[in-house]
Length: 183
Image (cartoon, rainbow, N blue to C red; front, side, top):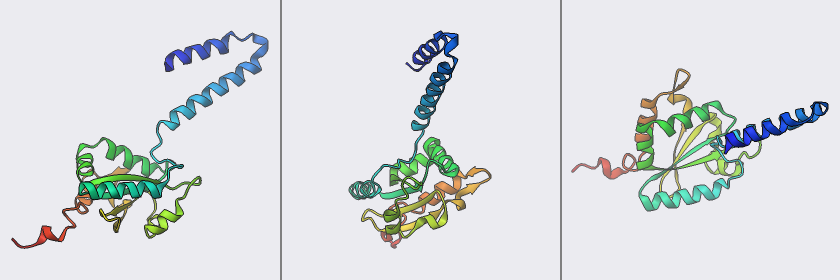
């Protein structure tokens, strides 16, 4: 469909008569702007219009029912480190496995459109660490950890080993006192 609409639009643009070169430029600009917006909107990780409070409440209820914790990733689509973390965590099997088995994930937007200040206040101001920042809640909705993501960096990206170690340190079983009782 995209290739068809591309060739159809170019055909319309270039069939305009030469005396309408201003119109060609306007139509070409509008076409390129539409492609840019469509391409950008498909890559959004954080939703500035989402109701973060409701999403967190739903995630806590799901986590409680499934015996998991909640992993809140706070950041924005403007943040290159946020995008790097998302890309790595979305494509690396070791990270995805730990996340899927142990966490319900929520992405909370922080941008000029929506800073989610009320939610971040309830989470004890995690933005003080920069972005992205990770907040772990237990199945009751209690904040049990806030992670500065810079400790998980390596070079110009993130360390898979550091991320997996961090996640494994905050799984439900790792924070359950029963795990450490003598048998």
